[in-house]
Amino acid sequence: QQNELSCAGCGVRIQTESKELPGFVPVSALEKEPLICQRCFRIKHYNEAASVAVDQDDFLRLLSGIGNTKALVVHIVDIFDFEGSLISGLQRFVGNNPVLLVVNKIDLLPKSLNMNRVRNWVQRQAKQEGLRTVDVVLCSAKRNIGFERVIEEIERYREGRDVYVVGATNVGKSTLINRLIHDYSDLEQELTTSRYPGTTLDAIHIPLDDGKAIIDTPGIVYSSRLTEIVPRSFLGTLLPDKPIKPLVYQLNAGQTLFMGSIARFDFVEGERQSFTLYVANGLNIHRTKLERADQLYEEHKGGLLGGPAKEQLEEIPAWTRHSLRVKQGSYSDIYISGLGWIQVNSDSGALIDVYAPKGVKVIQRPSMI
Ligand code: GDP
Image (cartoon, rainbow, N blue to C red; front, side, top):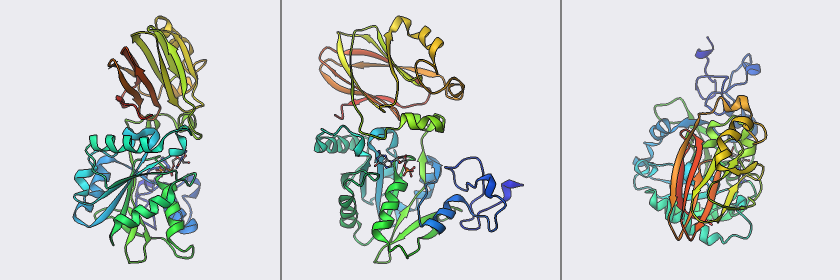
């Protein structure tokens, strides 16, 4: 029966299971009249954008209209999960429209960092992923850093067009949209919504002076990000909230680092060298001998090694092994999507095994820092 209920605001089918998906209503509010989804509720009462999530296929379908219209596409990514939050194939769908890359959460990077270097790194990596960008802006939506630049760049590249804001889930898109709402609209002015063609999903429009609008789009869920496959309650441990304090480990070949009970890093072969971890400060790191690692994990996963808890681990896909060879003289990051990365500045080369839940993106990339 419940399957047939729809939102009086946007028409989307009502569901009570998942807060992030379209049409969510808490069970306690099901009896209310008129019945509206949580997202419409927040727009109506707080003039506030809340993110909804869809998978990449649905998203690209929603977006396939953009290629034929004139628009500026603002693609927001998370600097802490860059490759995981970059929308692959975006270029194909936006056609010739310009893409402004907004890199969020830069407040998480160590304070002493040269931001120009980071910007150049982002530019190179985006290009390599096949994304052409008119510009790259670094910001922190939460801490309000670099936000004037974001506004300036939007105005500069918009040239009288609509603006579509696109991004994966958890990159801070709602935080950014809500800042834009406060910067662009009078508080009395209500947000408007309008439906994506051929769907029941409404898009939030922030009206602009010239009759155009900034249009929010649903966040994309990528199951290749650790943050999408761990239980919600573990997200707080995984997502850093403060600048990351890099952790340096001097390791000999034959040593292992456990990152909580969620991933494992083996230094298999190579001369003694240092490895620098860029992960959330709250994540428990445990060093041990490789030969003891299997047994230690069996005995202490979800306990001594740190979260997620044993029951939760049963819900997460089992680990797969990624064997990576860092070349002599190369400056690389071993990146685990949603968890962070391990920097290897190797004079002598290294052979590394990473264990992470099946499906999670694990790659070697040029060092960011
Ligand atoms: P959305 O799913 O893309 O709409 O993301 P949200 O705006 O809901 O943000 C996801 C999480 O990232 C929340 O915990 C935010 O507090 C956090 N967040 C958003 N922007 C920033 C930022 O600039 N820096 C940091 N450190 N966290 C942020």
